[in-house]
Length: 118
Length: 108
Image (cartoon, rainbow over all chains, first blue to last red):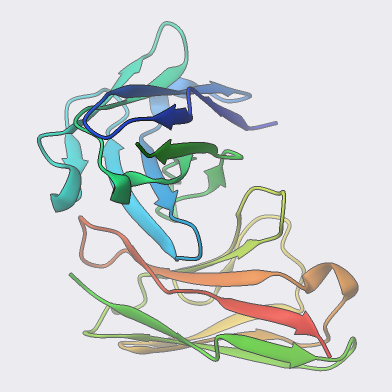
């Protein structure tokens, strides 16, 4: 079955970096695009970034453009989110999600918590 | 950016009753709208896409309707496993994908 497992979250000081990973299994990884979506404590879901199936196109929300980079390794079935210059407002659970054929997102991971605090 | 507004924030319903959740878009999204269910400790689950199409494996008691800016998710007869938070999401005009703030369906 489809599985997406995020890792790499933790506590980091403002201005520092963190790299999240999303290991995928149970489907043909290279055929799918992926999103990163986050949820800050007590808030709703917020889309962060998206990468196409072949990595040829990437999209970001305005507030992370220039600080976050999404990438993928099709040989290791893994998607990454490199987060630089982290801010307190980036604190959230970060979800990796697969772009579906009919829906924008059809499967989600369990999420990894990123806490930005001094 | 299209703003999605869900109402109510919390819905108290007895098991077996009908639940009706609303989602409004700040501008038309045609039928490019999805609904997701999120339970504590679990991954979100796709319920509905294209406003009214049930995802694979989703029970028939879940139904979606609407187009343009007004959408509804109906759970015809609430089961114990349906108590959760429900999010709507538009994908007509992205990036960014945008979500509603969620409706929590709780036991009355």
